[in-house]
Image 1 (cartoon, rainbow, N blue to C red):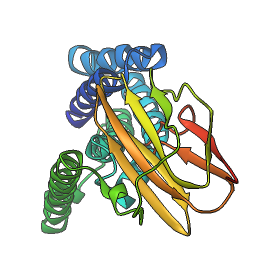
Image 2 (tube, rainbow, N blue to C red):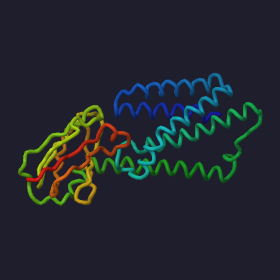
Image 3 (cartoon, helix red, strand yellow):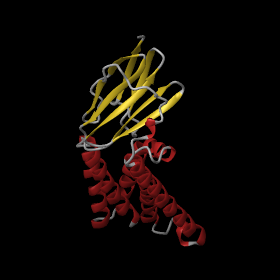
Image 4 (cartoon, rainbow, N blue to C red):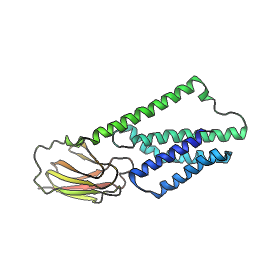
Length: 255
């Protein structure tokens, strides 16, 4: 029964961390209030209906974060908060199971969950904690290592200095302001100006390769590209949840 309020408070703390990075979002504030209320009520007035309601809310929270967690597992160094997405899903799932189990226990007045009292259950707990710690280590330190360099995108096969006028791409409010950019064939430069308090990326598939430029908060990054073929190319931010508002088209015209 104690796992439900702990999970609710942890999810509330993670929600605060997310908003400190991406800004004030009303739906997340509503979730924050609900999570805190669930945790407080589970401690102050434990009731069967409160447990099942808490389990449903945590399960919904898991569903919302699951796509980001999967992306974080596939690309743990692609974002500074991959580990929070993964932990949110694991903690939320455990809290939801605990809520439903507590509901059944209080209604039936007998223990329902016995798995965690044996060696197998203890081993599962240790493995889960180890996975969270390992993912956190890889995600945080890996992202910091990339964030402290010029980025993976510098390996872009550009051997000549661009001669055409560079274009500007502004990241503001987790949105790419310019949805379309134009350059000509040959080496070209995009100045990516990030005015947000959190980091972003500039991703683009070009010449059969995927290029990724990490962009620090409150900074300007020069993205130098080998635009050998005219056409339209999609650019985006690969941080989970950002692409919906941070995607655009680079139109390359023949010189």
